[in-house]
Length: 242
Ligand SMILES: C[S@@+](CC[C@H](N)C(=O)[O-])C[C@H]1O[C@@H](n2cnc3c(N)ncnc32)[C@H](O)[C@@H]1O
Image (tube, rainbow, N blue to C red; front, side):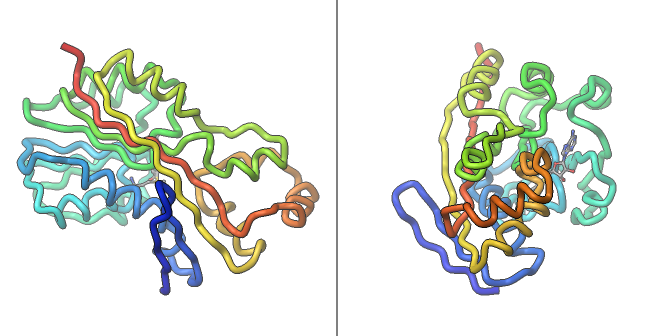
């Protein structure tokens, strides 16, 4: 896999030449790495990873030598949980973060944190999620894709992003937390428009293209003006309100 990476102001750019699983997840991998780099403490009782997927956050936690007694890896998908690394102190939980039962099924000791990378854009109701999460732990770090992901594509196709804007995310989070926010944008370059659309289909961060017919997608492939896809992520470092 050959990945070209350069910083241009706040925009991080990637080229994608390979069709490997890792390349497919390149933006999510980068987001998980950045999220974990924001964590300052080195020792926790429990770390809860909401929408843990195949373990991108967990791998970065180990790399940065952040210690914990228990790592709760929570995901809706059993297939993803099977891909998540195992260990004596890793507890896998198959649960839906949109359901009340999920939050009733565990309690956390002091000095525990909640983490979530690239998953909470699929929250059904933001206030429900952040209210329930804020009752579990004093401290949380989130990375959430925003509605400016695939912005140009959505604009020219005249479809609304299925995920939340920065403003609506901030508004809900600030009801329950004191929070520091950072917005990061990413560009992922492709060799052909066909590769780009194949990526979108698999990516799981849009959903918007599902509103289009096959014919509309074909037309969009001809008119899409950029050689890259756009991504926007809101990073949140939050503490409970006093
Ligand atoms: C884009 S992946 C991110 C995975 C991982 N956190 C990472 O950074 O690579 C989103 C994950 O959220 C999970 N997910 C989506 N909706 C969920 C829900 N309602 N409850 C729990 N997990 C959910 C998916 O199964 C998937 O594993």
